[in-house]
Length: 205
Image (cartoon, rainbow, N blue to C red):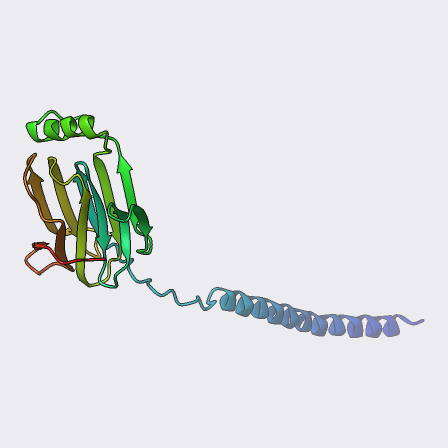
């Protein structure tokens, strides 16, 4: 084979190699652009919309009693919670309501000493708690039964949806005093943060 022919073949091969290089480079650039586009799309994934939940309603009514009488709370629908001394029956008719009887509190003031003295004589459980979450609106009746001529302390507190007290009532009764058997109050309380409790002699059975 002549030198001239070898030179021509070498030139042709070099020319082909120079043309193949740009094609490979263009293919590589396309792959890089595709990867970049996919990466960009991943970076812009649509996030689900998060809706702010409604605040929980923490409204409630709490009745604290220190004395020998029994308590029965009746809501506007006639449902009962507590102990009916006349019928000698426990009621848990108000949904999620709590009626609890505990031990006497170890205080030293004269009023509590009278309650303790009555407790020793009657062997009663002096601490009672009635609690109703999310109470419905309307008139509530608190009925007292049992030994109603002994000393006692009664507190009724209403709490709003933000769990802050929006109404309060307190009553202290001395030994031997005559007291109404029924008390009535409205929920929610008036806007001036007062919980008005009225004596009632009506029959709640």
